[in-house]
Image (cartoon, rainbow, N blue to C red; front, side, top):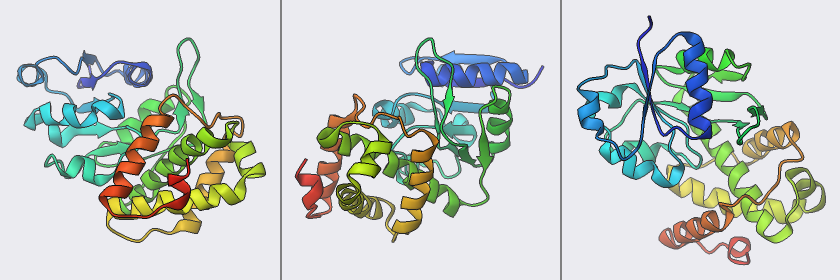
Length: 249
């Protein structure tokens, strides 16, 4: 029997990964985010600890994460950047930028291959292959950062633009490209402050459009859109950024 995998947070996404690891032969230990993880870490010696809670619960859960689990951590949240794990003393997690959807009673829907990087990237990629979910193992931290910002741009643009124009991502680019490009510049201005380095805007836009083409019918405005707008405005204020298009929403 292979070494076990701990999954913290068994929602729709955690359930997909649980199935994928079980098919690989790894026993699964599901852990609720309010359980005593320190006590559990003294009993369970996993090969991987997948943190599958939503982004709103990420920081509180990382605070509780036992030290012995930090070197085998994997993250999958949206709006994820290195600062999110670095502030907790986590230096080398495995990170996957998830590009598939999972909703109740519906099989996972792949938009594009999910990039993954870190010491346990092959383990994650091989597990997902059991469910015919495409992934790609990245070769550097720089590639990972690009992919994380790419996903952030996709999520933030579609959600924030959806507050104004509704519709899907295909219609957004076809009918409102000018507005979308203006909003992209505001989003990337915030992302540059968060990652503390310049970003390749055109390369990121091209990469984002590949994801648009992967599922042009994907609805823009998810239920998290108002919270994402509030967070973006808070970040803009934090960095003293004057973002006209963002502030017009």
